Length: 260
Ligand SMILES: *[C@@H]1O[C@H](CO)[C@@H](O)[C@H](O)[C@H]1NC(C)=O
Ligand SMILES: *[C@@H]1O[C@H](CO)[C@@H](O)[C@H](O)[C@H]1NC(C)=O
Image 1 (cartoon, rainbow, N blue to C red):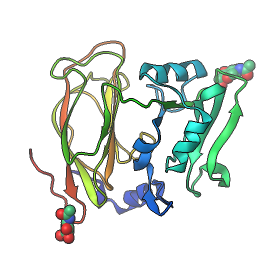
Image 2: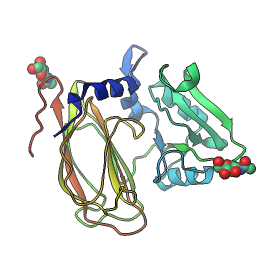
Image 3: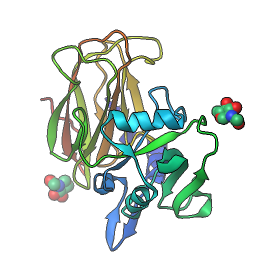
C-alpha cells in the first residue's frame, strides 16, 4: 500500500502547500476550483513552463475552451483558486492567482500576480484556460465512489489525449484509489503516455506517482479529501488503457480500502 498518511514529513509539506483560507466565513481551498467559473491551469505534455503563447492558446482550444481573461482569473482567485505557477492568459499576459501568503509564491502579495503583457510570445510558461463546459474525458467527481477508465475503454485509448479527473469527496474523508487494469505505452521515464496521480486538487503540487507500462500500481490513499488524475497520450503507439476505482473512506479511522 502506498499510504502517504504514514509519512509525517511529506504530509506536513503537502499540508503547508495547500491553499486553505477563510473567505466570507467559508472554509475554502482549491477544491473550490469547480466553482472557479471554469478557470483551470494546464501545463504542456512535456512538463512545466513549456508553452509558447500560440501553444497555450492551442491547449485551451483543444479542450473546447479559450485563454482565461484577467477578470475570470481574478474571479476564480477570489473564491480560492491559488496556483503557484505562472501561465499565459488572455491578451498575451502571464501571471498566476495567489490567495495565501507564504512560501516562495506571490512576492508578498495576494492577488493575481501579473508579469504583464509579454513582448516575446515565444517565452514558455503554463496556461490558464477558461471553459464553462466539461470535456469528454476527465471531469470533476464528488461521488462517494466511481469507476474511472481511459477514454474509449475497453478499446485502446486514442492518441493525443489530455484528461484530468479532479476528485473531491467530503471533508474529513480520504480518497482511496485502486487499480483494476492498467496498460499504458511503456517507456523508460513514461514520457510518451502516462497517468499521473496527485495528492491535491490540481496538477501542480503533490505528485504521488507517474505510471506507464503494464504493471498494476499499488493502492493510493490521499492525505486530504481531494485527488487529481492526469492522463496524457502522445501521437504514436497506443495501448489497452486503464480501469480504476476510487472510494471515499472515513479519514478519522485507520486506513482500509475496500476491495471492490
Ligand atoms: C524570446 O524567448 C525565447 C524563449 O525564452 C528566446 O529563446 C528568444 O531568444 C527570445 N527572443 C527575443 C527576441 O528576446
Ligand atoms: C468517521 O469515524 C469517526 C470515528 O469513529 C466517527 O465518529 C464518524 O462519525 C465517522 N464519520 C462518518 C461520516 O462515518
